[in-house]
Length: 164
Image 1 (cartoon, rainbow, N blue to C red):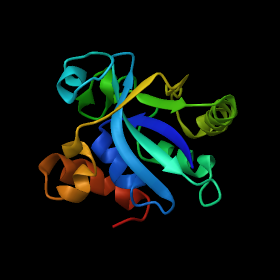
Image 2 (image 1 turned 30 degrees about the vertical axis):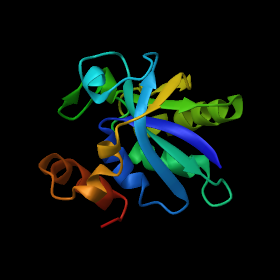
Image 3 (image 1 turned 180 degrees about the horizontal axis):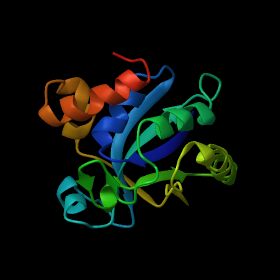
Image 4 (image 1 turned 120 degrees about the vertical axis):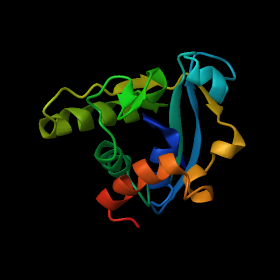
């Protein structure tokens, strides 16, 4: 299994999409330089980014396919915000573990830039510290399908990709 870490706004929204993709195992957490951040410290601006850790079998799904989905479900041209969610924790970011993935990611972004009217601002960096988020955040939409924020933001992302 390989893994990639994606930040594109609220981690509930990103995870809700990727947990429906065959061959992926998801977990939400925080990436940054703060050891053991909490949801409260992240919201207070400790510099951490909400991410989804995606474990995948590249014999079932390729990293390019994961990136294609990722760039369809968030705005990579917006710095430190997605919709009404504003702050560094909502930054568009991809964290990798090896040089081969970095090169693939950078090439992918270069190739899709033409699809966006503004420059892609997605941060691409080697994975610093990763901390799993609190248990109540894991698979939040699956466990809380009628939560108001989720109902307003997640169904359009799912519909865009043909999920119910």
